[in-house]
Length: 230
Ligand code: CA
Image (cartoon, rainbow, N blue to C red):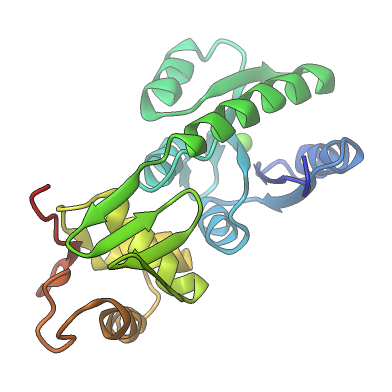
């Protein structure tokens, strides 16, 4: 791998979290840790990890909700860390979109093997990410390139992320708070940020930015990327 993959470790047991982080770093990964669900959301938005190790029992909520939140935006591989005798929970985690699980107490070699497999699946999944077309726009989610009428448009990373979330759910309204959570890691981030960035995106992508035909507002709810008939 050209650059080291970043792994987000979500685990409220601080000593286990630290030992996982050390193991990952020794194995050549970059590791970042979170001890709560809220922290995990912020770290995911900030670091854009290539994979997530996730404990399900967290002090501020259920890890299953985090799987749901991640899966509504992307295919980042998730390996769940579960207790023995938690079969029902494992099934629910897999149903929610986790890629795999390891049972505590687990061997570190086993964990690393599962993680490597999950990362391979993640790369394959990312390779099959569609190129989204609508009107004059072509949004290549894998290569992070946007073209308008065949010409590449320069977007800032945040502008691209907002557009990517909308493109991955093209035609569907994405709620303000879901966009804020996906891009800034917190639904308490200011909706005003969104207005500013949507305004910038319209200026770059719309033929008539004041009468947007592509980045459409659903007032009081969210935004959607218009899906033109192919
Ligand atoms: Ca726990």
